[in-house]
Length: 291
Image 1 (tube, rainbow, N blue to C red):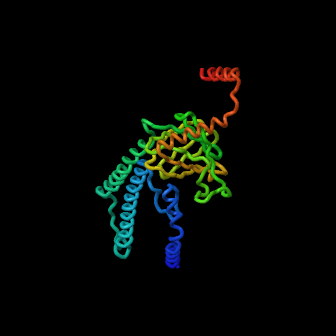
Image 2: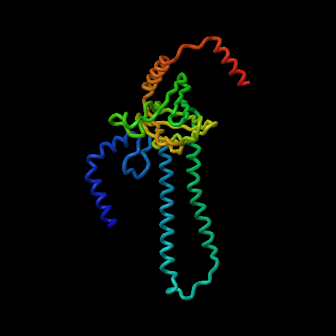
């Protein structure tokens, strides 16, 4: 019965492939999760490529270890039975065996640890960032600040089902995307005013918590222009599933044009300037707080 169900599922997949593949390929190319995806999302930078390499290394070690242990179990179950060994062995110690099952696991752990530590330090931070973005996680939306580009600040919220346009992904697309230039090292500073959130973009290999009262640093880069999707993967409340992240990577010229356009839009929404006396009082209070 189980074999029959699997054959039916495979046949259905073959029949539906011509219809479903175009939409799946669009999501695949956009750095988004795809139906029936078995592995990780395609890498869009060096960080993700190293993560995939480490994953493949550990998978090989785990597979070989599992096969080895399984073979040993089969040998023990078939060879050392009461029928074949009516008089059991009284051997209590075997020096060579005890050394082997102690040293071999240590060697495997060292093989795993070396690339793991290298990856941790590599993705921790970049010494010479080309751009800094402040990521503030709210309940339940994201705020992106660009201190290097005139302190631009935008809020990013998910698009409700009834407002989705053709081609937009449910629970993944947002009204305002994070825009970054291609080929640049982007430093990310995460924080949160309320609860713990998580800034997670699978195809870019970036994941950092946003913790109240702390500023946590990470970084990423993007190899080529495109749209890359992520989501908060920390259970942060009732709208946890409605905190998507969308990164749009553009050329440097397009990024400069976007920053200028965003600045003009922000200036158009700026209210009337406060009186000089109020500004002076505010500055005095700020100086006192710093002291």
